[in-house]
Length: 219
Image (cartoon, rainbow, N blue to C red):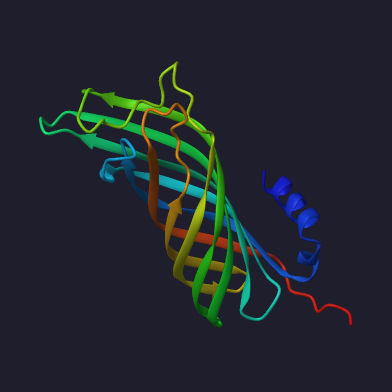
């Protein structure tokens, strides 16, 4: 998988041939939350989210002194847990393959502070309704998404930003980072609710190994 990712990136971004290139893994915990409008005339309602592990393959390159780009292939699970007044729970989890493409700006040398921001895209891999204990609420509760009759939207798109610190040890880099993502995707495709969106907060650690040093471009 890592080899295929490298080949794809080199094809799409030939200037990487002159850049410093590192590859590694990132993992940690994500916490998501959802908000929705049952109908166009109702107020936005927030529901409790879930926490789940996340991990990613990371490709990082710098083609200038203090700026570069980071690409991720990330496994991400987000979802909601909606509780009614009687304490009954409806819970659904969405599993995505997410692709953040982030501009990265850093300050420092062996110890660095980094800021990252950019778009993300993704594909829904699996959805599961873990618990469905009530229905018929007013305003309407969030619908199911993992039943045979459900046809949730498969795409994901939104914006991601983050900040963190990293430490260089020769060709290796260790980093700790917090990221916030806002997703514009409404997984509902059957008009059972008017609108729906999610946010996601991640706390992760990463290890990267430098596989290529930066070369100077010929004039």
